[in-house]
Length: 493
Image 1 (cartoon, rainbow, N blue to C red):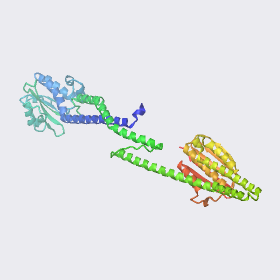
Image 2 (cartoon, helix red, strand yellow; image 1 turned 135 degrees about the vertical axis):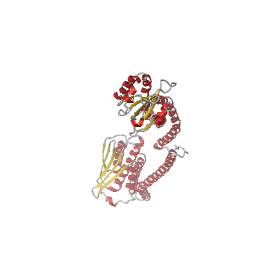
Image 3 (cartoon, helix red, strand yellow; image 1 turned 90 degrees about the vertical axis):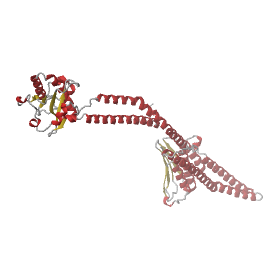
């Protein structure tokens, strides 16, 4: 099951689904972040501080105006006791009345005015005589604030009309207070506020819900849609790659009849056309190599027939002619020539049998290289009279092309020994392991100078060519008057 999902089509399908879902999620996060940012800007630090503080004043001061001492005590408690931003978030408004808002500047006083701009209460109250007197902001605060007081008197709820920046970076606020939105202004609260570090959006739960809904839609809608789209898009790609894979498998078996066609202009189409052209060239090259191999084999057979059968046949013919001429005069001599002709005929027959055996490699008959080597060595010893010692180590099945190449190398090596080495003993060694196979042919003949070998030497060149076809190597060591050792080695994949 896991191997099935490792296929390219399903990998691409999954990537389409993940990219689709990821894109929507990222866009959702970006949109939510932008919305939170603008809301935070709209509910800026100062605005957040303003609205928190005004709620406490609005809910209490209008109801304490009839009891000035109670209002004074409440205002001093709010200005002195202190509470944090987290307290505002976790406690109700009534609970926060026992604390001073640290969003307010604790070192600055709080003033409460009536609609006639007389001072009703203040915290701290440094001069009780000012209660009930007209409020003079320049004398108490240090700069004019008539504009925000006038805006508060008319009930303007625009924050920017009700506050002005102070020299120390805080904001001075004049906030109108009333018992309800339909009632007139009953008091004005004047105080300083400072920004908070961060104002949590009031509708943060909406964004959280939106994100969770988006994630759910991703799994219910976007992922299946992306998967279906990816599967449809990659189906054609899979077919094209499958066609190319099938053709490559056929080529690896030597069947070049498979020819995938892909007229598209993308990289896969270009690769398909390049591989098809390569296969055609390889097929042509193999045909050419086959022709060259057959030509080389014919040349070798022609040479063998010329060196042995033709010469022996010609010699037998001369013996028969001599016997014919002596029939009427010397029957004894004629019989001797006939015996010689018969011997030459037997030698020719043996030579032809040996050549025929060479044309039928034992590997093609299902015998295996080791068995074929022993049989051929026995026949060759019987034919040539040269003693052969054979040793096989690690006998195991080998690829057919490797068996044929080494069998041909053995035939050529023994043929050269019979014709040129003047040896009376040959040692054959065949060693096979899972990684390599090595054939060693050593004789005790007259040897030769390896450096003096002609590059056009048919025997050694032919053996090296056969080994090259199967990834093998040929090594020749020879010492004049001491013999020759030939080593053919093939590395197995």
